[in-house]
Image 1 (cartoon, rainbow, N blue to C red):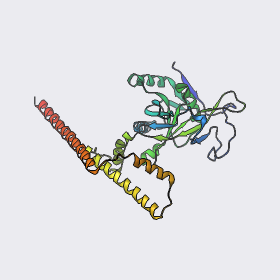
Image 2 (tube, rainbow, N blue to C red; image 1 turned 120 degrees about the horizontal axis):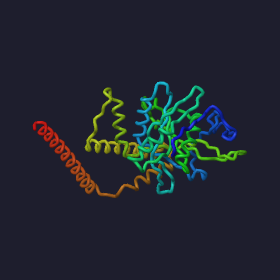
Image 3 (cartoon, helix red, strand yellow; image 1 turned 90 degrees about the horizontal axis):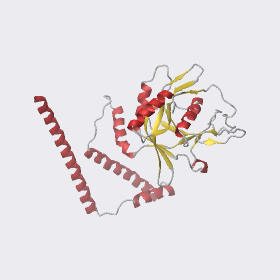
Image 4 (cartoon, rainbow, N blue to C red; image 1 turned 90 degrees about the vertical axis):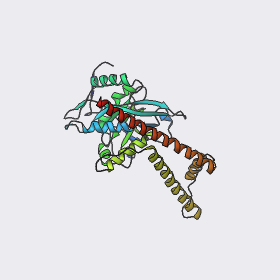
Length: 329
C-alpha cells in the first residue's frame, strides 16, 4: 500500500451516506447517521459476517497502556487490531483478536480527524516481519458510544479487510481502571446494506458477542487479585494450589446445582425445561467410572504433579548454585 494520508471528515453528511429513516427503537432513542443494532439470533443476511469475536486479554492491556500514554490534548485513542479469521465446526465465521498497535492521528477544532496512513503502513510492515499470520481485522477506539468519526474510520479500514467487514472495538478505559463486572469492550461490524435512491451501499453497526479463551482465565484471575491488593502485587499459584481451587470451584457449582434440583423436587421453584436439558447434557458427558478406579487415577495424577513440582524446585536450586559459583570464579 502506497504511503498516503486519509482525511476522515465528520463535519458533513452527503445524501448518499445518509441512512433511510428508521424507528426510534433501532436508534435507542436517538436519530444519528448510523444504526446501532444488537446481533439478531438468526439472520440470513449476516451469514457471511462473523458470528462472534474472541479477544485476547493482551489486547485490552495494550489498549489501556496506549490510553495512559496518550497526549493530554487527545480525548481518545485510535489503533489497529490484528488477528486471525477462523471457521468453527458449524461453519460459522469467527474472529480472534490477538494483537494491536496504536495509530497516529490528529483532530482539528471542527472535529475533522486525520489518520497518518504512512505510520500505519510502517507499523504493519514491522508487525508482519514477526507475526506474518496475523492480519489487519479492524480497529479500536476508546469511549462508551459510537460517533460520526466511527463511520469514516470504518470506511477507511474496509479497504484493508475487504471483502470481510472490519471489526470496530470500543473500549471504555474508565471501566477497565475502576474494575468491571462485565466485559469492558464492545465489538461491532458494519455489513453493507442497500439504500433507496442511492447507487452506493450504506452500512449499519451490528454488535457481536465477545468472549475470551478459557486458557486466559488463570492469568486474568491473577491480575484481578493484584488490583484488589494494596501493594498491587499478586504471587503466582502453584500447580497444587490451582488443582485445589479447581476442585473447590467444582464442589461449589455442584452444591448450587443440587440445591436447585431439590427446590424443583419440593415444588419451591418452577422447573425450567431449557436449564434441565443443559444439566442433562452436562451429566451425560461425565464418564461412568467406579469410585475406586477414580481414586486410583486421581492419586496417580497427584503424584505426577508432585514430581513436576519437585523437579522444578530442584532445577531452581541448581541454577541458583551455578549462578553463585559463576560469580565466585
